[in-house]
Image (cartoon, rainbow, N blue to C red; front, side, top):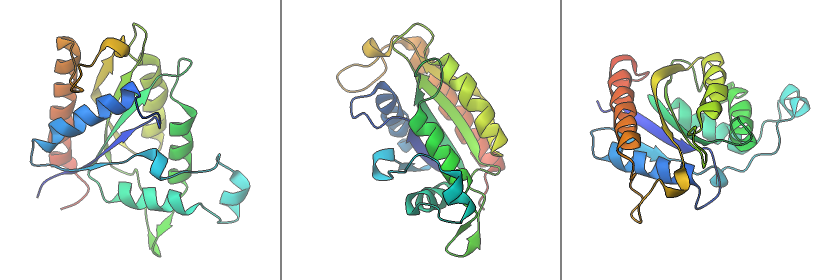
Length: 194
């Protein structure tokens, strides 16, 4: 059975570099035997995480919908921009809400438990979003995900893509290819679904 992989850009901005990188990763993954799902967070608006709502069992419907989609996957590729040396608040908020979902359609769920997760980032600066990934990695591990060591960072991302959305830097392209290969290998080996 082919691996099921969800690609999640951590930005809602239509022309964001992280969405471009996510789209290119999804294109490359679609050339494999994997089943790919691409999620736009703008389709799942969520309020700022509120512990009082959580405590009273009033989780937003979109949190449950995302939890259901993620729980159905073997792998997840998160592509994050870097904002102020960290991941964006939008992405952290989504992870916080989804991690609180305990049941979907009356059945217990742990959306991130044993999920194979690949990380990629973009930055307009020279570090390629390295600090965003440094912030994101421990969050995903705390949620129970199997986070890959291999990652992809695209520095100077404003000039990082051609008109067709392909990476122009050979090093970034090789890093993305390596991340995709690692994600596929690990989801085949330890995927959550048979």
